[in-house]
Amino acid sequence: MTTEKTKSPNNVLDSNSCLVWLDRSYKDLLQWKRKLESYLFEPTTQRQFEIKQQLSEKMEALVRRHKELVQLARSGKTLIGKQVDLIKNYLVETKKLEDGVQEYMVMLHQNA
Image (cartoon, rainbow, N blue to C red):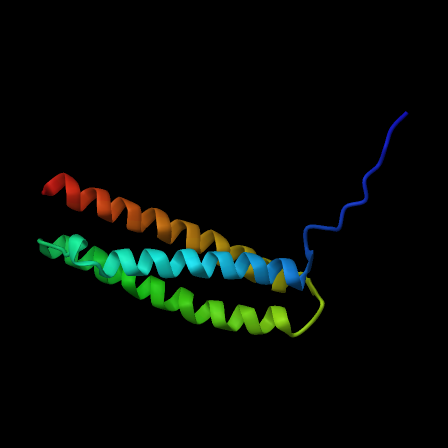
């Protein structure tokens, strides 16, 4: 005897779920931004300064994209296709940025 579970396709999501994911991701992003701007993580070399600048620019771009995606998620009850892909890509990019910030922080403390 087999039981089947009905799953919604990967390219269709409830907008409320997306808003929750976006909100959590945004809060994490702001937390990493505060850490990056902390005096504890000031660059001491040209390379560190360049890395911090790149991370800051990526962070600002993600903050802008967050606002756009929240508007998109609020525009309807169900998100489909490319809308879902945009949100998933945003979440992946946010995670990559967090990893980059962590690497930067580790690099600074290894040089200290």
